[in-house]
Length: 81
Image (cartoon, rainbow, N blue to C red; front, top):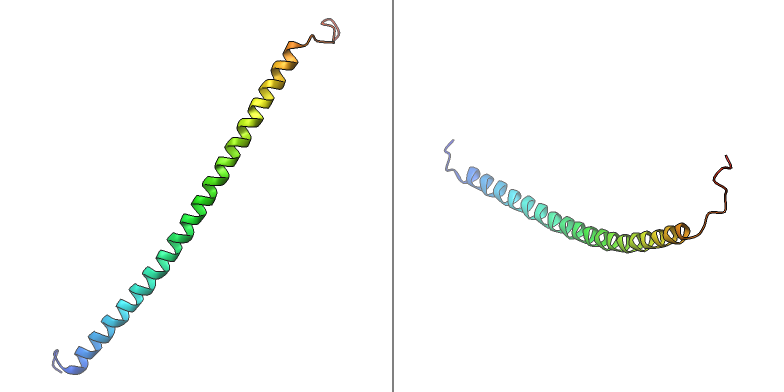
């Protein structure tokens, strides 16, 4: 059988078309996945920003409370053990 026979040429053309279709399908799914990952990263960044703000507020409040407690005289006697 000759390598350049029409059946073999059509077979290679069909295989090439099938491979191109698989690559296009794969790229379409990959782009959708990257879009989803970008949305998740954006959401996580927003949540981390809110957590940072909340943590900063809590840290300032605890420092303020600590300073206020340290400024008050202790009610317990030193020799009471």
